[in-house]
Image (tube, rainbow, N blue to C red; front, side, top):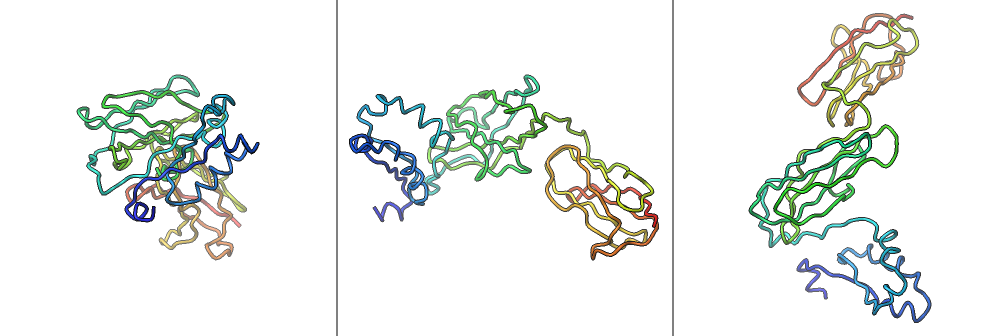
Length: 276
C-alpha cells in the first residue's frame, strides 16, 4: 500500500467484528479505533459486522462513544476545483439557549459539501473546532442548535464549502451566539476606585473577537506597564493594576493614562490617579 500512501489516497481500516465476537473480546472495538487514529495514513474505519452489530444494537453504543463526533474527509487537493468563495451564515435566536444557523451557498448552481464549525474558545480554527454538521446541498439549509446549560457563554460559528475531493474554501465570516449581552462598540470604562493607592479595577468591553492591548503610560508618553495583550472574545471584562511598572517596581504618585488598542485602528484612553 506504500504507493497509495505516497500518492495521498484515502485508506480505511478495521477488523471483522465477528472475530471479536467469536473470541469474546467485543469490547476491543474502542481501543482498536483509538489506536488506528494514531496512524497518519488511516482516514476512516470499516467493520465487517455480519449482523453482529445489529444483534448487539451496537450502532447506538458506538455512536454515543468512540464515534460520537462528526468528522470530515481529508482533502485530495490535487483534484480540487472548489470555489474560493465561502458560504454565508445567518444566526436567528429562538430562545435564551437555542438558535438557528442558516448556511447560504455561495453558488446555488453547484452542489457541494458544507461543513459547519463551532468553538467555545476565543477564536475559531477549523482544524481544532467542533464539527456541528456536514451537509450536501446547493440550497440554503438551517441547523437548530444551542447552548448546553444555563451559564454565561459565547459560541463562535463558521462554515466552509467543500468540493467532491473535500477541498475547502476559506472560513466564512464568524457569527456569534451569546447568553450574555454583547456591547455594541469597544469601550474602556473609568477605573474604580479612582484615585487609588493599592490597586484599581479597569473595566473594558469588545463587541467582536479581536486582538486588544491595554497599557499604562505616563503623561510624557512613556510606557509603564502592559496589562492585557491577547485575543478577546466579545463581552465585558476587567483587569486590575497594582500601581507597579513592567519591572515590578512601585510607581510614583501622579496621573497616568490607561490606553486600550483594538487591532490597529481604535485607541481609547482614560486618566487614572495613583496616590501613595
